[in-house]
Length: 111
Length: 113
Image 1 (spheres, chains in turn yellow, blue):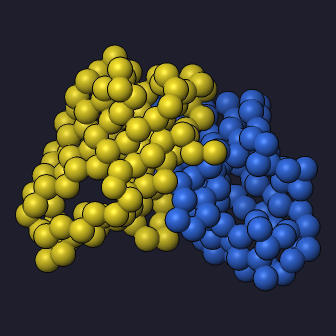
Image 2 (cartoon, each protein chain N blue to C red; image 1 turned 90 degrees about the vertical axis):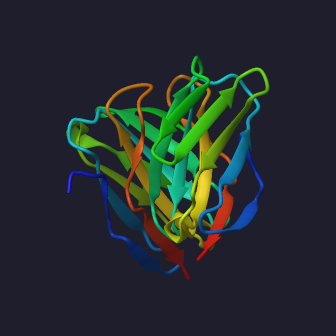
């Protein structure tokens, strides 16, 4: 079963624009991770944010976590065509790092 | 290349046949995970190992599925008597220890005809 839900399910923007994706989850978590997946390929890890952290940055990526609302957001600034992919949030709610993934946001960045 | 590797990348088989997939984790990673992903969905957890010990199995892992990690290095996932519903991408991931990032391999795409 899927724990998280990403919103929106699909997002289409122009190069240079910012893209924001949201993730909601249901139970208390130890950490939350964001992954990118290009069509038909494996997952690439983007950022891990722990339950006691509120914000993390990595290059053009910014992730926020609000444990009171059980939600996280991923912001990609100055998007590029190469950012076109599906983006998944994954939560670890058991402490065993059995990741539970959402259904993903499909991002299309047009040149 | 020191990432997670999986073999084969693609497998086409006929219903009822057995298949085996291999995963080589990042060197020195103690924890190894298997996930399954169907079209349009996020990956779903199947099982994980800490060193050679299989510590948890999902209810998705029917008795036709078996996973091993001899000597705590590479892992194999075998599916016996494959069914069309087994068609999916099988993903392997590894992490150094609990609470750390899981790094995924490229996956094995299985098609059961």
